[in-house]
Image (cartoon, rainbow, N blue to C red; front, side):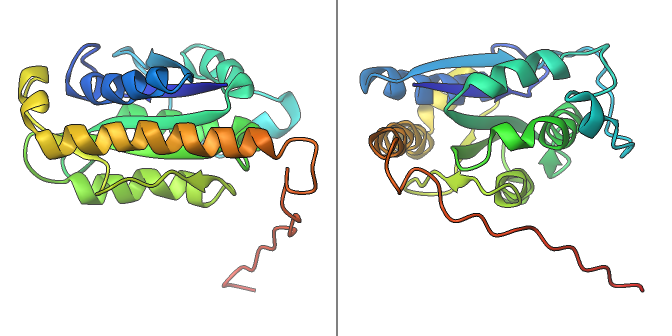
Length: 207
């Protein structure tokens, strides 16, 4: 079993990476493989709502990291989306990637566990956490619980490790993710493997 983690920070080894690394260490202790993918600091397109991915099976824009991440998404059993706080919101690269990822590859993530992790020097964490959680919430994914909201505070990796409560929260995410993955794995081949699928209904406000 494998957990795919996305590090949306422009700093490859910064605070967001540190938080995800703490989760990864706990997963490893419990026999779960993980991979942290850095989304980088190169330009990333936003979703333009063209719907082309429905026919192509991937995002029609193939000049950034999105589709290579999508191929890894197909093979993962669980996901963690990590982002720094920029102006009380997840940074733009993370939002742009997740908009397109869930549009083009969301079907591969359904009914799998997911967690969001945010990092900030001081504030904006709860607002950013709320934004990231909505991706999983609209896609039939299982929210991984923890002992507090999934955030760390600090302006450097060293400061993150001093946030003892944040570190404990990250460890709990790893532990609970491992537990959920093992539960889901034990249900394979049984009637509990997948829920009864309720078809999606769209109701427009303007008719």
